[in-house]
Image: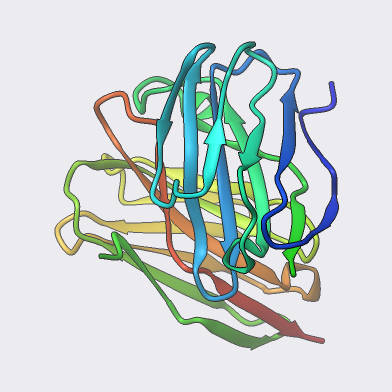
Length: 119
Length: 113
């Protein structure tokens, strides 16, 4: 049981390049999300998915695309990288998509992050 | 518009002391309030969480105090240890089927030996 796995751990891009950040979970979680973390800004939600085939925008979606073809995988695509997208990206997953029920169902598990630099 | 306001931004405490981090929220639809702990180079991990039907929850040295009328909640770390040095985030999630967590901006805690 690996939890939430993100690849790559580090990436350097040139402005205008595209790339895909991979995220996979083996806990059969229905909810997955992508956050970016910038100094002094906390964690900001980019996109999220409540199940295979269903995605929606978060707080800062511009410049990013997502898809969810399987329960396990939730890749994040940068279409044309910009220096403003230099950040640490975290993928997270949780079992439940509500707030009722046992607290344990609401736990979001985070991956170790991808540190991205756009030059 | 920042939905969850966290303070202080940084905190330095001596070993054995009490660390207190505060958060305030505006949206009364929030009904789940977790705290996450993040060590350098790692992803955040859930530390402790509470629902607004209780005023306090304790797990070991970590306690959440919740004041529903004031729309505030805080994390208390008793007998703080150097190993507690990390960044702490409060968060909130609203009822109604949305899984979206709204995070505070974080508090960097340093516990000196």
